[in-house]
Length: 311
Image (cartoon, rainbow, N blue to C red; front, side, top):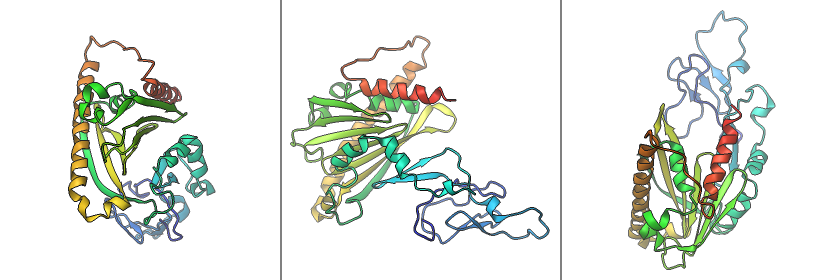
């Protein structure tokens, strides 16, 4: 946040010699590059640079940090890497309306499911969730393989996740598609306290999953791993409704919940890495879609093709 409390985002590149300005998370009053000391305000403007006596045609406004469009939806921050002019007013406009248009009607559905606030306004913290833990996984597969596995409409769940399947009523599994978001919804019968009475799994194009079940909110963010198209990294962030996280008797239950989730992730990693090996075989040929369940998968492929066609 800048001096006025506004949320801002910038490329982490000094305008002098392209060194990273910061290298960690935390709270700062200004942003100082450790290479030559160029220092920027939290609004991105250059505040201080030494040894510039005699420089010509120089303006601090011309060397501000390069901004990134930023928008907020509930507890989530979204960035758009389309280039914006650091000297124009577009660098500081409210991009929330653009995000609302991007999410479309999915935002209302997810808000009704408690993604933004599990207590519908009666929360003790800004969004009613407490961060519990991050778990990261390095996977030997392309990031789109991870997306495909997530988006098969629950097709693989009865075969590959038998313990999870036992807590879900797969006959109620349904898909809801929006332009940039796919929702997969299922009831669970309420016998598993971790899963609650229903579960909603949302994929926000291109690489974000938001899972809401029981008192839990879980996000999965997948990224390509460097220049190797056969590897990716997935970060799982777990949040618990504050009413549950503040109970002193919940520590073992939280540990058990995370352990159950870990089992599912390891099963999915095995599936995805196996598929990647198959894709790399000369014998691999395109498969067919199962129309009753794989709507989200087909939707993702069409959306991805539309994006790639722009380049």
